[in-house]
Image 1 (cartoon, rainbow, N blue to C red):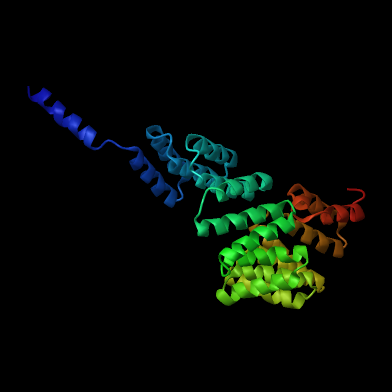
Image 2: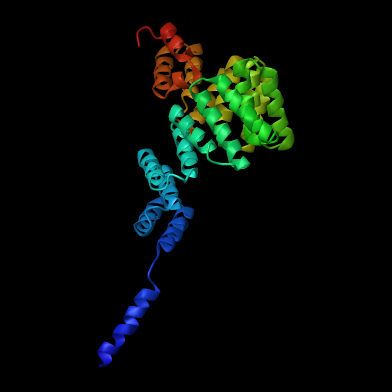
Length: 312
């Protein structure tokens, strides 16, 4: 009798400590906070076994896949979540951001459009317009990109992300003065706002004012010594001013930090051409093309290759 009398107590203990989908979700969030994305995935999958329609669970699962660079799995997870809960419009926003990040710009534009048609949250609408603008810029539709950014600007004329993006696209439609104005406004609002310094330096490069450009890139590096674009852009201005040694030091540091930047290989190729090292230059031009330079920036690298690499 004593043995059997323990059974109800044991069963009660099991029931009182049974995990719910929410418990597993919270545990997954804890692992994600610790950057243990594999274990986070284990627990969010368990959460989905309890509730396969919870959009928050799908968002967390997809984000964990994104963090470990399993982008196809992340995209499938977002799509599955939308299939289970078509009203979870924030999944369009999240999926659009990932599509933009992996340079699937047309698909990203479609997702941001769907999101914009289903939310009245102005803060999120601003970001969605900015990201849709960046996606349109990715396919070189600069006027459409500008139009989206102006909608975002009318919603909040002091939004730093909007101002920086406007600074990045205005010159593409012949509004260089406006580009500089928006970027200076961003710095006036936030004096240590690094993205504005990067874009200002780039604008002065385009104006062939390389000494001034270097001042802005120097500020970028002071704010973040691990920012690759500060080094790569300063490298180009140093190259243009004839400081080949300094240019090579900067571009080497930039590629050490961010070796996937196709634009940096174009800059190093130009430096190698100046050094008469054509084989190394052509190797970098090929790498720039492999990493998607043409789609992002146009045909300059292809023209350089035709001119310098006839035997490569």
